[in-house]
Image (cartoon, rainbow, N blue to C red; front, side, top):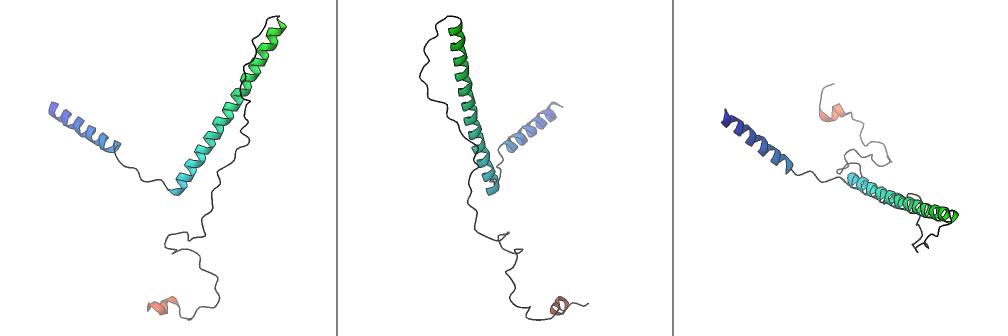
Length: 133
């Protein structure tokens, strides 16, 4: 009984390690573009958060100085800090469109060019392949 438990635990452990080291397929171009757009949006959100924090700290310091002056206390002079930088509106990443290419690599189901003349023969597909109607 003890041996079977050891075997089961060893098999489960080797399966777990094998699954942990499995290689994932490479992401598609669409997935890479989406990841880049998500990273761009996250970076912009970080800039907005830093701007809002800067503005709130300035407001808190101004309120402190106003209340201290109203109470007759002297407040220390404000430190020189760089002004808060507004990140502006969000701008999506600009991607260059790919050249017009077939939907599939082989172009099998891509729409044909404009027809300039009628088909060269009037035979039906059944007649061409020799199949019975």
